[in-house]
Image (cartoon, rainbow, N blue to C red; front, side):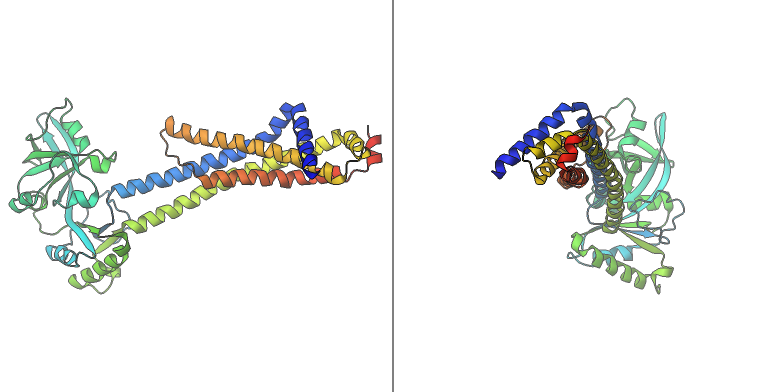
Amino acid sequence: MKLLKSVESLRMSVRSIGANKIRSFLTALGVMIGVGAVIALVALGNGAQVSVQQSLESLGSNLLIVYSGQPRGSSLVRRNTSNIVPALTDEDVAMVAGLGPDLVSRVAPESTSTSQVKFENYNTVATVSGTTDAYPHIRNFHPIYGAFVSPADVDARRTVAVIGAQIYRDLFPAGGDPLGARVRIDGVSFTIIGVMEEKGSSAQDTSLFIPITTFQRHITGGTKYQSLNIQATSTDVMAQLEFSIEQELLRLHKLPSMEVADFYIANQLDLIGTVEGVAGTFTLLLGSIAAISLLVGGIGIMNIMLVSVTERTREIGVRMALGAKSRDVLAQFLTEAVILSIGGGLLGVAIGVGVSWAAVRFAGMASVVSLDSVFIAFGFAVVTGLFFGGYPAYRASRLNPIDALRYE
């Protein structure tokens, strides 16, 4: 019997909604927009977070960078290197490498300078980096053509260079094989031995790599390094490795504390954690703003349901006179509200997923739809229907049958 009543209540609710199609659609529209906005904005926030994480991970895996100079935050990329006084030595490199294979996988010293690079009638400005053969493995940045600087190149101080993708386009606009071509860097002739993969980053694509010993001889004339690129054996030991390097460098540089240190350490995990925290807060803010439209949609449902109760007062009186109980009337109007919210929620899910797909397909934005956001948004839509449809349904169920029959 209860099942039959429930089925009949559902049929009556569907007929009532179908009798006012436009009004029902407009009622559910607020829920549709709210659910769609929550899903789409959270997806865009997640996409931005993933995009930044991938960008950071493309700089290298398990990466620590020791920089010369006073602390300047946790950035893994320093744009301006012209005023950096090299403070790191061969003894520092040996110390890091000597921390053992349980902590350190690879270490590559590096010094950089901005220089004019010329080839025939073409020239460009490049970030010239002196480093060793370990650099590509640490920074996840490899030559796509030719080879990188080798240990023999470093030992022999050879004048060889590996150019970035943008430098290749600038110096060889007509294409062609650059290997073996001679370019001039600050008046010194270098032979191109490789071309780096394209990263889509101006800082990386405009880089040019030469042996660190060659850099010291022809570019700076000094023996110290601006930075050390260090690859930890795993993410689990990065905090321990950072602490060990900090303490050993203070000892080697005869410094009492980090407050007066001539170096600082950038930890990839710290930066990723900071970015995740900011991105998570941003995504939550976007989702919360979008959720407000769900509340507006719920208010719209309550408003229309109250109007519906008023319009159908006489109908309610007839049903009660024929034996319908208050709970039957309550169930009918509550069912109508839930159907509107579920229908709006389902369409909203489709809209949100569609907007997320369109953002990736046509706008080139990063977007990641999470099942959590879909279920939460849809569940919130159902709860909205129950909550805001509850009062109109209760009001309808409390009508006096005699007064309802007399209503005009």
